[in-house]
Length: 468
Image (cartoon, rainbow, N blue to C red; front, side, top):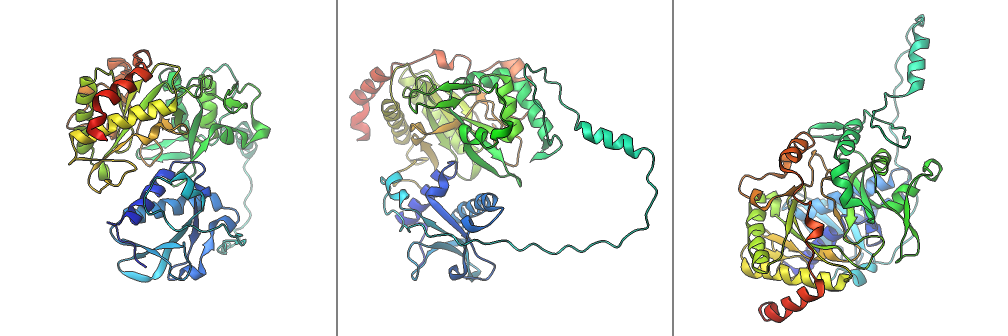
């Protein structure tokens, strides 16, 4: 049965897929399958049962599902014979059930506030499946040639390994795969990525210090996987340095890894980290966020619309006498920060963010829609206040952005947010000249704190009648 794009059911599915996209635990909500070209869902292969490349296949197929949902050439279907199995048909091929997927019962609890939740399926045992390997044709044997005397010297050079970067570190780190291409536009090798983070360390570390974090790990073909720091670092217990720093978390009662100096920063990059994402709260006060973040996400990468929405947000925040700071998200929009005092709590900060987001929506209703509500529509800028939930982590200022291009999530001065601004102009080639000339626009962000309780009370007393 076809699920049309303008229905609540379709919009809810799209929102769930988008919301789970950056999450490390998305596999517990959404299960994916593979079908061979021309086959139907009856012939589907559970990715969990694929031996060897299941993780990479899951990432690739998740991207395909999201792309198909956003594509006008793919039609979302739900099976009549197997309740809870969703798949796609292209407008030109209705015989191939592409990229089947299903939702776990956990979706009902996590996304209970959404209308017309999808049909869910209980998890079934995944049958083991080995991807066939193509036979390789051996090249004909060539006549044996004499080995030159320089062979011994060459083998010694190989044993020494690649030339190590000189980062003047306090701890010894041996870097590997230095010539591996990580980003393709322009081409950046792992050596280049390490060099960038070594150079930017003094600017990015203040935003990572003592904060729970997750990383986007490069996994090939410009794809990345989001992993929490503890899972990421503990993947290789045997090679974990003794000097890695942890802080006792008051919330989880466990040791939490932190990234507080250049050695920890580069160690994460050596393990495969490309993008750093940080919590709003400090490990030492995990229930008290230091700031709220409001996302402004443009449709189809039309940054001009996001710029207009950012101007409206700035006018509102100035009218509320709230100091605010803005950075590019490195993709299709912006993140606006408002610093809060501590102690406070995520319930208060989330309520503040929601009211401000609704005021922005009220000011420019024809241009914007709110994330997580029924008024979400194509072609509009999305105002996202949901990124202030306790478990959310946001890309850190000056982090590289995972993807095909070498782009940096860059703090801006408000007067820079104007026509002609392009996220792709902020790269490792341009950022350091900018910092020498402009300094860090976020330098005073964590010092201009607002009383969270007083702010929420003021917003509710003066503006709740407008948005109720």
